[in-house]
Image 1 (spheres, rainbow, N blue to C red):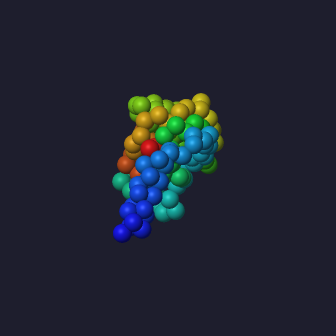
Image 2: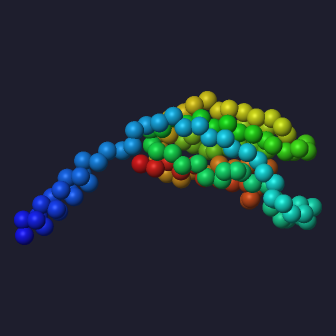
Image 3: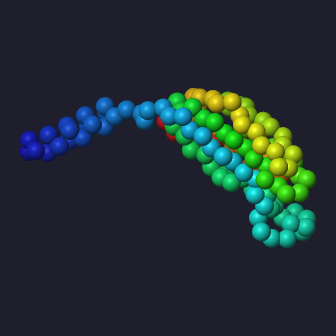
Length: 128
């Protein structure tokens, strides 16, 4: 019986004293991409973000580098609303590095291209 209580007590102590991961500096490269099919058909979405999900821990310092990799004159935005409030509008073959910020609010936050909804969206996930 004492073995069971000891095991349960050890598990509980380990679980209750675990700490959040140490904050890290994280850098992400986000690119525009065109899906490989005929995009002249009206209504078919064809532009996407790569990657379409960025995952960090609360407290991490985050740098996002956004590249419009189009080889034709087409604009794209990288837009994320509060609490992170990032927005840039790039012409083709341009890039932008957002100033580093701290991921201080946990949750799932959508980033998007204002010109290419609904296909050009992604998720910024802050764990913790």
